Each structure stands twice: as structure tokens, then as C-alpha cells.
Length: 66
Image (cartoon, rainbow, N blue to C red; front, side, top):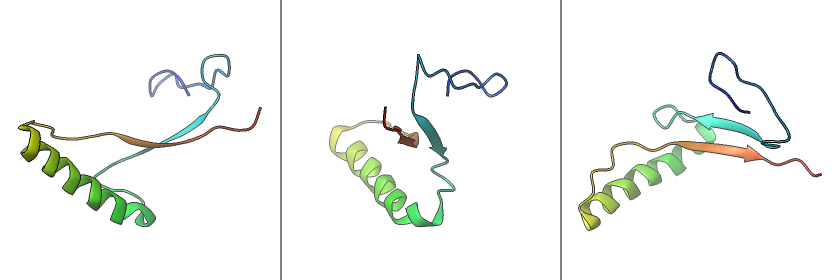
């Protein structure tokens, strides 16, 4: 999918996958353990490398066979 919320469209010549964006604060139940791990990982990376990472984005993508 390409474009903003108002004009989202699937243009296969640009992008042929299907993308599902996940809200890190409200992940699907099946991914809650993974997101707990990612939040801890973010905290540890911040501590180890003196970074100020606040949030992150996640998505799942499906690439259909050609």
C-alpha cells in the first residue's frame, strides 16, 4: 500500500506486498510477549549505547508469490 490515510492504494509496480501496521501500545494478543521483549530490548539498547529511543514502529508484510 502506498499513500497516506486519505488516499491509500495498492500499486503493484511500486510495492507488491500487503502490510499490516501494528500499534506497539496495543499489539494483537498473539504478539504481546514479543512486544514486551522489544520494549525491554529498547530500554537495554538505550542504557548500553546512551541513546534516547522513545518509540518504534512495527509491521508484518506478506509477499505473495509472483
